[in-house]
Image (tube, rainbow, N blue to C red; front, side, top):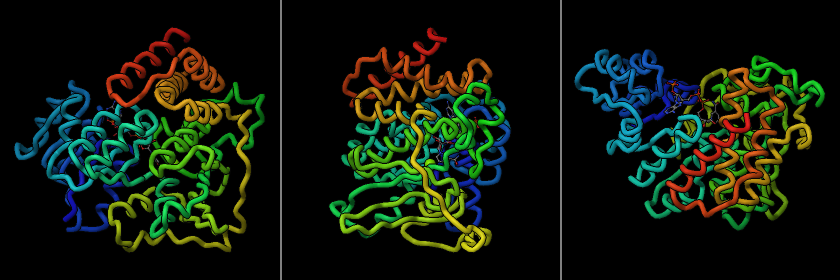
Length: 381
Ligand code: NDP
Ligand code: MG
């Protein structure tokens, strides 16, 4: 039995991961689960899967979770509790599915402990790619990508040599505003921004997909995961979300990975890796129904967040951490109705313009930079 822990088990990726595990009775055991504040769902998951350890980030929810679960389950809370789940020694694979910077410290702690990671929390690589990849090498830890684009590239690279790779082509759906005119952006609502045409995801990544910041974060994520230079990573809009990314090889061949847009496919690939197992029956693609697949160049004027992410990636060091923190705050402000959609890139640009980059090899520096950038957003707003 492969022993799985999930941090962020009550989110979109966490729930989908448990759905994949349900398909293979007797093959996986869930040993650790964590949530932030959704105690009801965390309790229901723990009663169903009987993990050995559970953590609730919000300490106010500890008593409720503790009293609902049998004594055989270790219940912890707060930051230390989440770290305890992430580093639980009986884990073969940790699914890192917390959203945002909050996913970094437990993911890093698990890597330091030598636990292999199935990574959804892209923000941790954006903020601390150098630190995580270096630590993973030292500890001989595998980082398996769950993010669909990186998972596609991982599949395409199977059996290939690094020196054969010329470029990576990351596909992007373009989000709900692909065909909106620039002058309508100021008036778009939270509901419109959350309505992704192809994927059903958590709120933060849905807004990131609408601004194209998600693709910018994924460019940085790809840099670290595949050790490839920024100039060799292309972003291409592909509204159908059937091709999840492509690898271009030195001989002129391209490999692309395709599936219908459903996160259970990349998640299952990693859970059963290196095996392939039967999927859900509804996953077949009817190519005749699809008709055609389209590809467009991204419009960086319409979607300045993508340009900001490229700029942060070029600057490197602590700049991606600033980009990430400013973006997390701006997205939250937008979701709470405090700023408009067009303010998101303006705020991020303002915070980045005030930052002087420093080396980013130390977690405490990254934490300080993250706090500084959040403070800077507050002052600006
Ligand atoms: P959700 O918002 O749906 O879920 C987030 C999870 O993290 C929840 O379990 C939540 O707990 C927990 N959480 C939130 N804040 C904290 C915190 N401060 N401390 C501890 N736990 C916290 O997000 P998604 O599942 O959509 O995304 C998770 C990650 O995966 C993101 O990094 C995203 O970019 C990435 N990803 C997601 C994809 C998707 O299809 N959803 C696709 C590719 C990547 P609670 O429920 O209690 O609030
Ligand atoms: Mg993705």
